[in-house]
Amino acid sequence: MNAQRAEEIASSPNMVTVTYNKESIYIEHVDEQNGTATIHPLDDPNKKQSVSVTSLQEQ
Image (tube, rainbow, N blue to C red):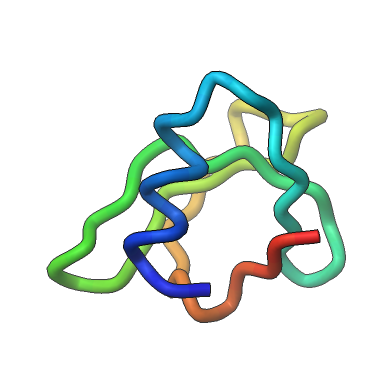
């Protein structure tokens, strides 16, 4: 995935299924300049991490 698409998903009112390492995640924030996203698993909002947007997969 690229940073622009990750930003579109993050700001969309519709739920889009995105995975990171085969786990469904929620995109909290996208840093387009650095190509990173702050994410957390759908079932654990406290487990935030910053990852490369290229490691995210849209389902």
